[in-house]
Structures are given as structure tokens and as C-alpha cells.
Image 1 (spheres, rainbow, N blue to C red):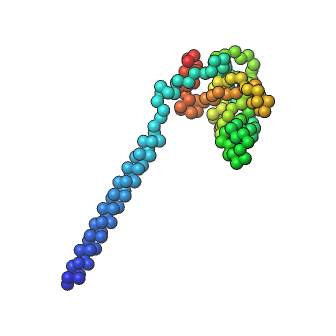
Image 2: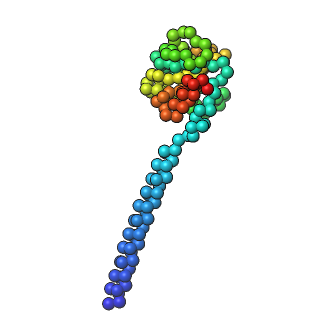
Length: 170
């Protein structure tokens, strides 16, 4: 009889422990999900989003990209044999929709941008570029006279404040 009582007590304790651990696991999972959502929802402060100042002498244009070409050229590796490049120079040809600042009179512009991968069409259909003169090496290797210091698009929520600041003359 004592054996049955101990067995019944042990079974009850084990079931209670399993139920308590199950509730704790669910609580921790919900807490982790909450932290994940809070982390994903954070955005940069608006004060840092509008602090970009175009370089002196730069040209700011609103453009529609007509053609983009991958160049397979990348900076930063030098003579390193096992270098894995992260950014490449991409060659752009774009129709100028509007001159925001600087002097530009041509209907099209060609420039290069250092980026990881190609943008989707929704980004480059209506975008803003801050252009500076290309250095001699870039000019000879990529074959364009200008480099994009920034490429901004309303597609990216984080770029919208910068675009507004550029349009307002900041």
C-alpha cells in the first residue's frame, strides 16, 4: 500500500513540474518575441537622419535610372589574395528629372555608385543622387566622370527626411 501511495505522489509531482515548466517556456517564448518586435520596430532618430550635408561643389539631382551595369570592380583589397569584396562599383545612366542643387544642364547623367547589390526598379525609378567628381582611378577604370556620394529613394523610409532636407536646401 505504501508503494502505491509513493507512486501516486511521484506521478502528481511529475505532472505538476511538467505543467509548470510548460508555462515557463511559453512565458519565455512570448518575452523573447516581444523583445524581437521592439528591436525591429526601432528607427533612427530624426535628428540624425537630417544631419547629412552634401560635399561642397556637389550636384544633387532627382533622376530616373535608365540603365545599371555591374562592373566587377571593387575597392579595398589591394594585393590580398583571399579578399572577399563586399561592395562593387556599379555604372548608372539616368534621365535627369530635376536639378536640386549645383550646376547641371544635360538631360542625362552617368555616374558610378559603390554598393553591395543592384537595387530594385522601385528604388531607382525616382531617386536622388548627390554627385561628386570621380577620382582619376575611378574615372579610368569605371569610365564615368561622377561618383554618387549618396543615392536616396523615397522607397526607403529612412531616406525621406534626407530627401526633404536636400529639397529644402539643407
